[in-house]
Length: 314
Ligand code: ASP
Image 1: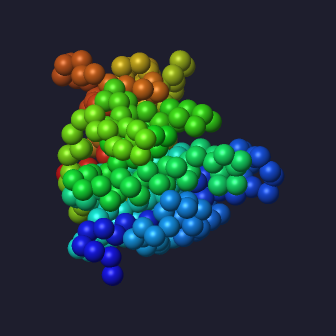
Image 2: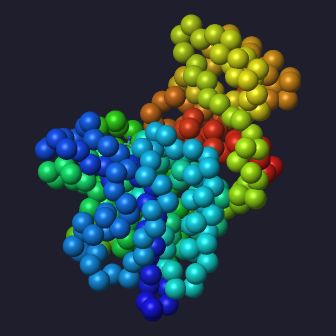
């Protein structure tokens, strides 16, 4: 058995990092999530001999991520962190919804040990895949003494998981840490910490005891030129108990949509506003009648936060 707190558990959920293509040289048109977690580890010679265990939880394209998988993942991560011999957990994931899963884990798991998500923009069969280096960085990060919190190891940087957001659909440096920037950098195999590890959260862990079918429905509506209140009204009619508006600029909302939002609030629906801008969030205007401000969260992250808030009151 590995020595105390040296073991890293790699949990696979799919994504491009586990993607394969029959077409030599392909960066696109591959099958995401084709490989199990052990195959990803086996493809990294530098991981040979490290104390590792692997577990394939799912083999999804993360655009198809669902709440049942989130529940199973948070429960699996929590169970692994409770093992004294485990130093940390790595979660391999698709890039598309990674910021949502990171936010979910941040809110539901008290990660006093590191929980490091990682991913890739190129499939495992690409001539020069980015997944192996990202996985090596993530495993090293998960075994780093003193590290904690939900993190993202990607493209030579480490981000606080709840701050990370995907900002490009194709480039290899596809993630940003928002206004906060990266938390740390990998430099020649050494970690350069730029600021403190993120605060351990887990304040919405009670959601893990709620059946997924009972998680409150929360949807996102985008504000844009010519926006219609009917979109928001239809979601409320379909059972939404929370709505996040992806507002323009600093969270501004088209007057038609705002009128529908006010009517929904009067029916007890919670409405938050975020920004559809790629980076940055919503800076509080101080206006007492403004919709609840999602702060730095992207609309997708805000949806997770609002759903958990409604599920737990936390
Ligand atoms: N569609 C893929 C996924 O999120 C994209 C990726 O992993 O880069 O699973």
